[in-house]
Length: 359
Image (cartoon, rainbow, N blue to C red; front, side):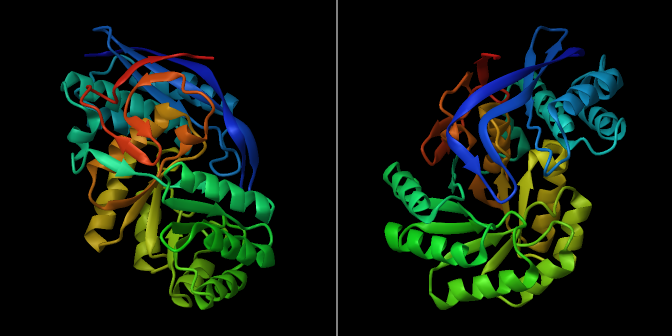
């Protein structure tokens, strides 16, 4: 099976409600879809999310990276030669991790099809079902409370609360949500780099004093402020999850060795795809550091690839793959079965897609 052609297109999927974090507000998923066709007629699909405030990429830069750099580097290569493909993919252009991720997952889709197996079984096959949280966007407190109640009523027992815009309100937001949903619902807090290290320690300590039982706090400080995150980790009891601070395996090693965080969030758009994400999993296993598999604001195409990774590896103990639950429509048939908080792998080969309606 040889890589015959690589094409790009766009997908536009409206959201149920605007997605709001400390970094941005988005009303629709508008991503780049990659389609790789083999000489045997098999097709592999991938997706890149242009998240300029995190990866620095735009739709235009993603298209250019794929068509002008990645495509010439790997066209004509044999899918079986996975290591060489990934070497060329990762060396033909620096950074551009979302562009690389889209091509990477399409390659893995074809690779699993060549081996006639669902992708998660090739990657490790640890489990066939995973449970995701759902994101509650940062809003006025009453809106966040109502959104949280709605999510719980829809069967989600793990809430990821977006904060980071107003320190005093952040404490009140979480307090009111906890009162509304009760003690049996897990709460994760994501500041999206919105606090300073001292603000983070104060807020987290207040949450602990109020006995709000927070599972973890994600990326409390700026991505570059490892000393600040180390200070937060050292001076609070709540587990700290590194997200924007971890793009590469080298980042993961540094954070783990310096004890700057307790947990690692793996996102394909940051790592450049499954190949590099697996390296982070291996490092985390060596050090005994649990991982989350997460996503940007993505459609079911790339979230499905991340779900296969999450199902495959034991070290991934937390899942934040709620992209499809936030979308109004599902333009993708096949793939893992997303049913509320439950994501179930199918036995179809590759990632399992049957068709994609490009918009």
